[in-house]
Length: 71
Picture 1 (cartoon, one colour):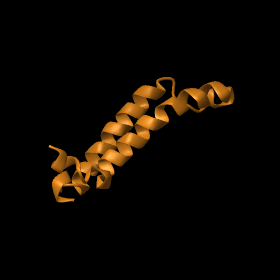
Picture 2 (spheres, one colour; picture 1 turned 90 degrees about the vertical axis):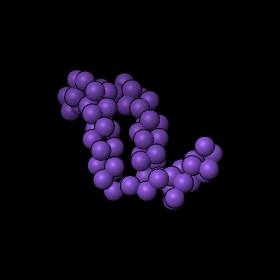
Picture 3 (cartoon, one colour; picture 1 turned 120 degrees about the vertical axis):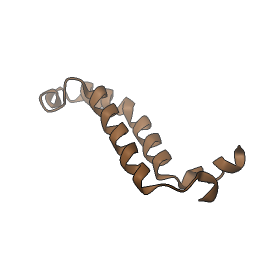
């Protein structure tokens, strides 16, 4: 199992998912710190981010077909 995960740091999919997960708390901070953005941000911001994450993962799957152990 660890052999398969050894090269996980090279995976674009893992990097993008980890980055998006790390940015989620920033959405709340930005939303509360800059109330003037309320008119530009969608009402269901987390749902939009979730759908975008799924779509990005689908697109990345087309480009990344190598298993983690072969990276």
